[in-house]
Length: 439
Image (cartoon, rainbow, N blue to C red):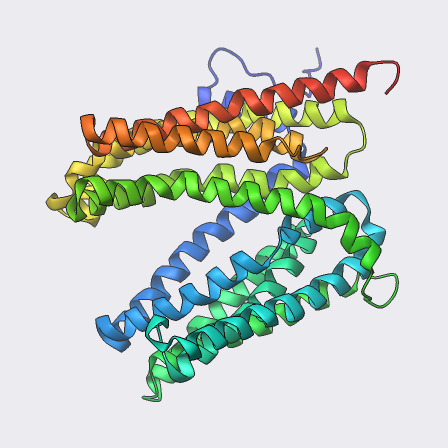
């Protein structure tokens, strides 16, 4: 009898093999490959950032490292406040309509150097009028402000690459960006020309080079030359603004607890809580990569039920992986913290374990939120997000005073859990609308 060519997961097959078999036969092969490649790239970027941090710190010392970090913070804040949410709308609209590439690329570059340039100019004027408010001075301030338009252009064009699902090109450019910065820093250190200004210039130069690489990759998808389209800009802006406001609220949800711990408990507890947060972000790296790869694929699909089927399949796989990651993180927390940070930081372990639960809750929410965002981001997300933020502040105030930093972690779990019914409601609403005769 000829054996069946289809592999069978029998009783002797390990549970790991069963999971791999299920994932292989449930999820699109290209999606799993892109997730694996992007996750590997993110791991590389973490190590590259660590190497950069070590090189800068050893070369410049604590004070120079501080100036470097402040300049980088100015640039990143400028990009955050000037992007108008267009990075999200770029991914959404180019995935749905690839023919918009010339207009979206033209608009992205125009916004970057007009809006980003204005942001830099306003910053320069304010720091000139109030020099005591400037975190850094002189050439370093100029470089930090110059980062804004180029950083914005890099962000917006990168998201066009993500939208057309060119994840391999995206990952290669990310690796090239970090690698080029490290090489330039090593050259300057070897030449004895290291300063906060010169080492910061290395990162800026690497980013500008990477921007040209992104544009070169996008040119293959251009039917005609990039151009500015006010009509496209007006159509895309509402989605962008909603994403912008939603992202800002999410940022506050992730960070306001640290500020409240500092206000209510002091610097020592803040230090412990910050370590727990940073370790928790490592656990959430995988769901973040899945969302990055999944969102443009969902946006490109026209059929709502097909979107939902893909969301469910990916969601099941994500939660299976997250159960394993969360269990592993909890198991190795004590030795990892002891080795990496020392005995003084062992007090963050119970907080970290609770924050791991928070990351699992966020993963559940991402299944619904990606599906909803791939169809339409409702304006009601903004007031609801503000309501959750208010609940988060109130819970932090009550629980921190009663339980210390454990209370802040619990407040985080509850707050992100409140977002699940909101996105679940809109998931059911969109599915119901699709099933009605009118749809």
